[in-house]
Image (cartoon, rainbow, N blue to C red; front, side, top):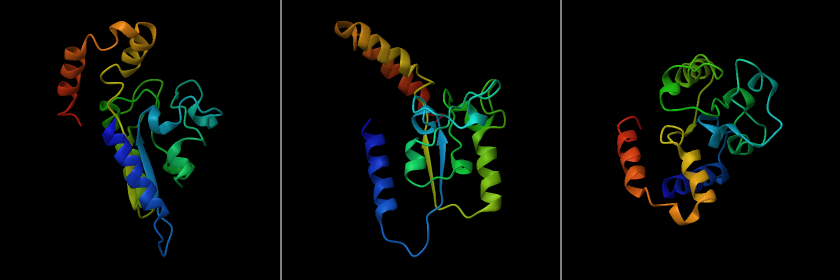
Length: 152
């Protein structure tokens, strides 16, 4: 959580710093960056075969990422950075990043990933429904995070 706060603060500083030219920002990752829950979604990311749910209200868009530079996909796990996933973005986010880099100079790449790998939504749900048991499985959460670390 602290790492995310620091990342957002760093991005704000980069965005607010005076520059001679515009900054090209590309966003990779999961629903934290795609804009899941911030409807409406771009049509191509909210249809059968692609449920990435990319939103014009996603925080990378608010920082200046164009629609073609918002590559994050709701539900993405670390593996989907390398290869796509059924019902999501089929090509993989790093391949898409390579395509963008072939067309334009990129100044900043952001990434939010890992929550889906460790079942973040389940942990939040459990804390909401059973607050007294919320962190009872702290050892399991720590184990999940430790297993994810090499992929990150």
